[in-house]
Image: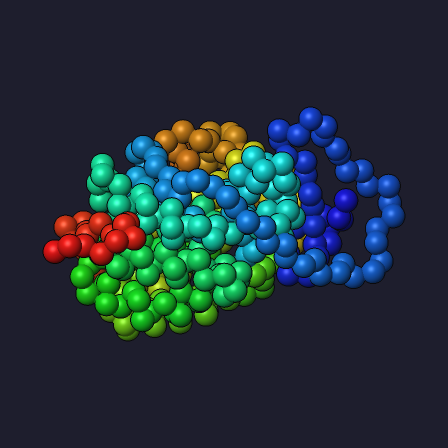
Length: 354
């Protein structure tokens, strides 16, 4: 079992906790023999996801979308706090190191999406891309699944949104800019901290904070409505940066902003506490105490209306600070995406007669 205290180079964790559905659970034990050698890099393994559907639906009242699409499972960015890590347990893989090094791509995504959009009973609603795992993570350079999906949505004039912490989204400005003029796309850039030292260990393979600000500037310069997502806000570690992040994003040209409080479902709690012990030992107890004070005494509250914002005095103060900064910085807002331009794709091998 890899030593969690020394993550391999470029990884968020060195720990491989057993998936919660495994028939046997293992427990690591420190016997005092700490490896002296520097941990070696671990190569990324990419496998094929053979899902038969591509669009996921939800009825969550605290989410701004009902439909989502994820071209990949797992995420090479390795963000230690990622709420999607527990989803790897469904594959009998660890939410720890496996989540960021054993990935799945969906080569059939464009064909599955075409079939769905061409369905007789399909009704157009905006699709959120990359809300579970980043659609522009490093392996997108090799596989190009996200770009293929966007090309189909562009062909169908179907509205969609993207969320990413990667500058690779700039590659697709040629597709996104014309769609933006028709109110068919918006992009959200996730920005957790402006502190490069914290970001390097917190989000080891994501773009540097200042590089993400450059991405916001380039997207908005191309006329693409761009939102900054201050997410997650980590009490006692990054929460003091809220106003500075919003100001930097607004200066870069962001049209809108939102935030979310740190979420630690299932195995993420243990992984995050390991990370705190290694990288922020003097703040670890304070961070967890403040988080629990914002979660009704628990590390995580999954109830709608609570999971994204939290509750209690600290959570209310965070909401007030965000609202004041939003007004002071005068974010103009993003127009509603237009569903009226949708044209179902031709799913027939034969040409239309007329």
